[in-house]
Image 1: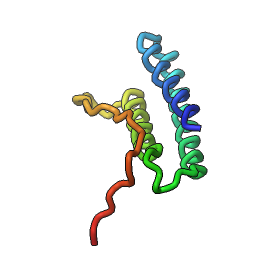
Image 2: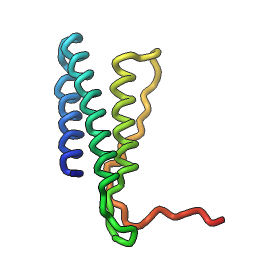
Image 3: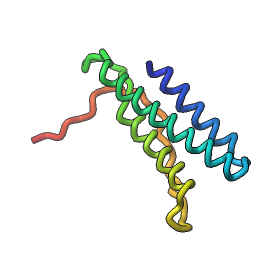
Image 4: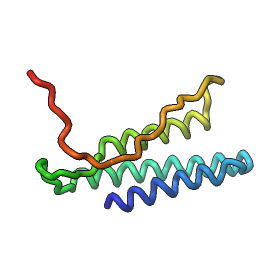
Length: 110
């Protein structure tokens, strides 16, 4: 299931990159398509996380939370481009891209 999520995410990114020189109306259509694909990817991610059989003691697990945050970041970038509020500097934060969890996140001590 995560492989499907990655393929959809990569396809969305390829469409964004490939349509950067497109005509405005065509570009808007393509970006709207990307937003719908991001919705689909997000649903697939939620479903994959819910059906994940990873045990808490396994050394490597897929980090669905991190993937969801990256999807949100891509969505915000597309939405910000399609309907900018005003001209302002871009946020230069990069996507994490590493979705392997080596261990459980540390719980805060009481």
